[in-house]
Length: 76
Length: 149
Image (tube, rainbow over all chains, first blue to last red; front, side, top):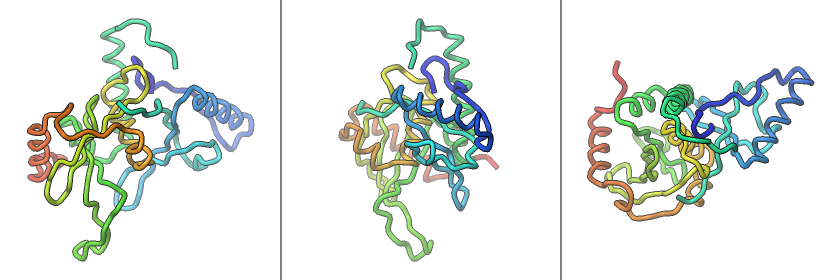
């Protein structure tokens, strides 16, 4: 998520390919260093949708289709 | 995050279109229909769930209403009593409306306690219109916000 632009693709690749995985890890860390939060949308039993908060690339499920980065929350 | 240079209405419109598609891809059909029809999403609270004999599971005693660029409203599910407003902002610059809703949804469904601990809590009515919220709750209760079949 980016103000003025909405969804912006940061990186894409296959985690089973070592080189692409390194690039995904670098992109993930860069976003967190910029102060973004990361979440993975998931489907739960009963059709419920939710998200999993991830702080490390290793926490991202290997079969995750995407990670969404969004600005950190602060009291408004 | 790079600063947005100057306001560009067409760019903002495209941004909102992309944000709506991203939101739609994350939430379920009922949540999307509610947002599309009335501009809000309801998320049930995950903490302090209590057992219910009828459902044989656990029901949430409270829920949140997410409005774009407005505080998150929390209310008691059974009574409909409005409990308060959670004021929270994502970043220093204004996100597209649907991205603001999605950011709240992502944070609430992944780390409810963390988001609530971050927010400034106020009595209902500080930034939201209680009558509007009550009307929205009446619509939800009547099924007026259920997805069209």
